Image (cartoon, rainbow, N blue to C red; front, side, top):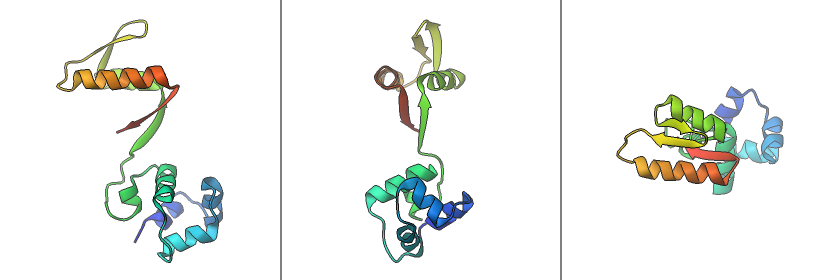
Length: 124
């Protein structure tokens, strides 16, 4: 059985409130919770994003409820990478990468994300 109801109740939401937040009728959500209807992939994605859990956890296929996607600004991302000792500042908008087997690939991905968007999505 899926975990939609469990997560909705854990977040102190009524069916109506959840429906309003994700743009879905409360009776549809109720059918998903009881297993009378199966959500489409787009709906699983929307619910998983709202509750900030993996789709597999939401579907009841996994017990791993760790956050998959976290939206953060460039500044927060850079500070987090510095705090985790992945990057170190060299100067204005210039950073060095701490030695790592995947260093170049990581740095390229970070640079692409930072220079292309004000808000970034990273899989953790």
